[in-house]
Image (tube, rainbow, N blue to C red; front, side, top):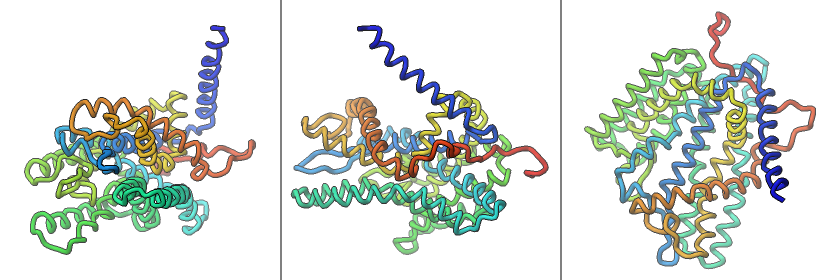
Length: 404
């Protein structure tokens, strides 16, 4: 009996390796695998960050949100590791500007190009909205507290702000291909001086940074396409300048150390983005650019590359459903009572240790959502003789006169 039991895992592992080698062989040599790796790390960083700092506390017959950063502010460095949105916008700007140039070279019109990109980006949203519409109505009919429904909907739909900003920047790509990142950076600086330095301007002024703040890494991506960030010197300048500016803003200008929002604080670095969040993003982009060569070497391993490819093909599905996976796990576990790390106040290292133990369970729940809804992003299964989507090209910056 033991031998057949051992054969099944071996066959599964062999099949995984064979599949990884097929993906690796189907990928053209011209593809810059570092771009895919950076996008995957950015998405997974956001997911893990949310799972670590978002708590749903069961109290008074309902659920409300809390954060371990509220009671344990010394955990702020966690947000420095997992708040990776700037890297996603950097890669997004790079890929969009390359894609637009390629489309124009093929004679594809801007409306056709934009429709193709936004369809892939926004198509998964319909499934999320449909499920949560049904869930909200069901909760109302069963008498759930309005505060709990508001909490759940806010968490479930919070990823949509990111998609709206990203879609808007994608649509504006033809206008942004030559924009110097210093211009949106200057806008963020002036907005923050008015808000925090002079205490002037209307209450909505900070929301100007929602566009200007993420324009900075997006236009850095366009500069990457133009070849202006090819040298390691440029990456080091971004890393050192961004780190120095962020440290100065936190130490002397009173900006929060956390790069994500913390309940109960008067200032959030992320909602809307502050100058500290933008300078921190510059440092992240510099580090990402420095790691390109190492990532390209790492992605030559078939297993690593196939995992990265799978993440990229389902990036929006993972991003949209990760909060729902957290809430589904938390709500289901309530049947067993108030569990530490899931339903209790995040105010101790015991909570942190318990939350780390629950991460595989969150991942398993997210996998179930991925299996159910991935086709909304990936589209129908392709025919056998049709080339895989993996063969789309985005090449590393070639040192050739033609590219120059």
